[in-house]
Length: 259
Image 1 (cartoon, rainbow, N blue to C red):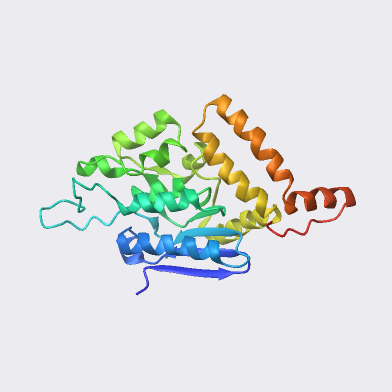
Image 2 (image 1 turned 180 degrees about the vertical axis):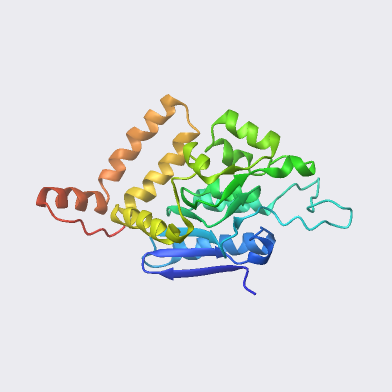
């Protein structure tokens, strides 16, 4: 069975974790498939947005697959080379030039919550829950903490990490973890509506804007000002910016080229 499905239709590439029997848990094969999907989407002609979701309706992603190793540990780690494939995935998502939308079809737990936080936008079904239960098995969500720190309010994040208790979808929206919460039957329509709004925007503006967003987030205020002063003149010289201004003056819809 293919553990990650990649399907492109029109301007959207949909990447689905296809392990519903394991609640779409992450393992090395899933991570490799997600990274390959991101690369394929960016290489695809005309693709302008990516959706990441899970198969079925129970789980978006329940975290890392914790099948124990021979010594009883839940994962294999070489202390001399503490490399983890999930970090490769987060790096690939951060470097992705296209907007990534999480279609949260079910529970997003542990590494699944980190995957959600690594996406740019998110729409969730109202039955989904969100949490970091690692402390209940003697661990702490170290691998996903950098992602969560950039999305969640600090005290709420600490409570999630220290208690391991999940929160419902409606609270996830109230603290900014997801953009929208809808009944499960409306999830596809809500996701498509968000995609439609993204596809109306200039592809070059989204690409350069996402790059600037991630760069400025790690800068001081003064560094951010200096960066903005360099980026805006560059953006104004793109074909999309020139077309956008022409279309505004001529009172017509713009025709984007992505250049």
